[in-house]
Image 1: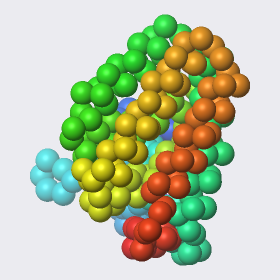
Image 2: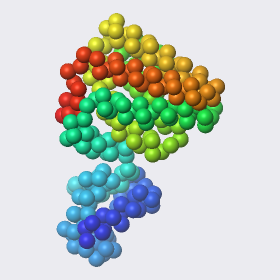
Image 3: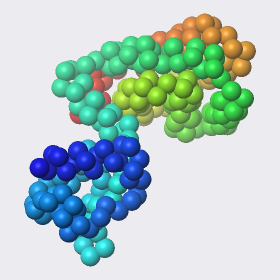
Length: 239
């Protein structure tokens, strides 16, 4: 019964019948609606809480509130699976290239003026942070996420978000290791030039060239991030 109650509430959340931040009805009302006991209802709540679809607050002003599905939850679980399998970081980088490179081509094919504005603003923000390695890498990663988002494919966006969670951790690890070194500065500037070039190709709707450039950029980034690392697996990184 707890699973049935959880399934009913889950469906309402996923379909948007319950919005982010909405409070679920009082326990007494839900117990009457589903004809279940308090322990059964609370077990249903635990199921939904474990899926990050609700949050539970204790106390007089507490209760259950809705959270909409988030890619970060899937990313964390995917990370656990990859850790268990002993997945290498090289494997993860290869997956990112497979997912992200075609998105650059898709974006070049369908881009709008607003897409170009957002891309240009992202590039300008990164350029202004070039002398701050930590802030620059954050802007750099946001640009990569934006490429996938603006491609217009929701499935690729979710899948890429799962991989990006791990890639971002690897990027931060590398920043801690060599931020501000000549090699780091050279790599950042080369990556930035690739971002600028991609925006130009997207603006010109040069689909094949955009995908080819982005594939090369991703491969070069992976080579740089994987060189001379003691961290070689997802477990090393996230464990």
